[in-house]
Length: 467
Image (cartoon, rainbow, N blue to C red; front, top):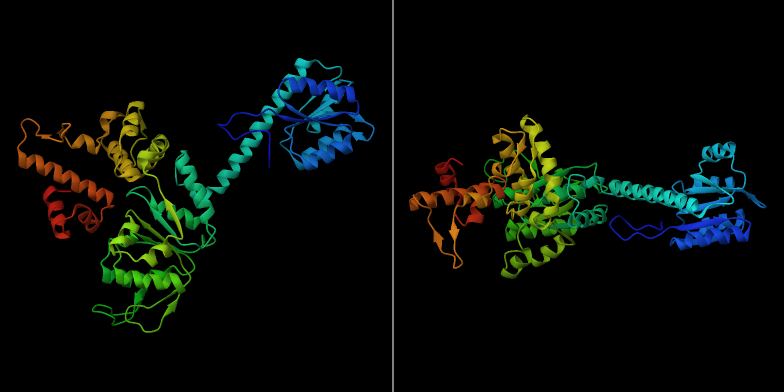
């Protein structure tokens, strides 16, 4: 509906008022008073003309005479109550009695004005009435938006970036389109995938997720498509895969960019015609699964170097969603902190904590390479180690605090006084490995790949540093 008010945060428009009175001079006087205050005015000479205006236009306030030749002001009041409850009606009367006031209020009138009227009284009543209309209609908008986004209530934040993200999810969710969710590690790609599932027609069916980077190529094929008995050593019985388990539901392929080219070809067939082969089978099976893919990689760059199929990319990226990193929406950090502190304290069974203004300021200046996941870990660590009820800036140990490296303008590195080089390098290495494990959600194979070392190397170093 079109109202005479802008959404919160925009410049306010004045009200659009419908004046109903069978006396032209009375209408004219009221119109002049309201127009001098900047309001827009439409006039009606009786009840029938007023009802026609109300049926074809939108108003913010109605001022109606009590008695008119073709009806009563209460007829207008009844019509507004049935068709637009948030529209206030002010009754005009030449006989201002207590009985009339009670009758008007019981019928739902906002107020009444007696004739002859005082301009200041009229202006005051109109101001109060239109402010009420504004609040009521803003509440309707907020409730509508809350209902529209209720499937995404776990995606926290009030920033424009998060509002746009929820808008996009709301449009995508009801469809069956394949969605490619991109974003840095820790931004909440699986959270977005779950929101899409909750807002879809498949919401009552299964949602499953698999991390393609955490499973070897051979095991991943069996994980996705299942296998027949005897298909490989150890396959002592047939087993269905995730595609069958997610039939009629949703399957999230997390870190889809890590799949081998051979597995990509098999995935493309499922996306094209819904058919696949179990490992060791010759008869294809058909499933109805909505596929969502997530990755922190640049898949188009991988397409260019030949490590990702171009046809699969365009089949996955029917609708792309990119999640903004936390450093680009720092205004959301206070909301996230309040939620995460409550959640962490309940899970850890520790006393409720709050965060100081200095600590919040420190977080909002930090670049957060691990995004929301890193923020949660910082809060969890602070809730465990902080003795006070208030988490202060000194209680938040950031990666930049740990890496005590002084770099000059030409990138020279200064070794801290009293520290030997082997110990200094070991300290840096252990912190980088810990950060890589944090970014990969504890998956050693993925952390090793980020660092450019082997899985056996990272396993050795994890034991070495007691991580």
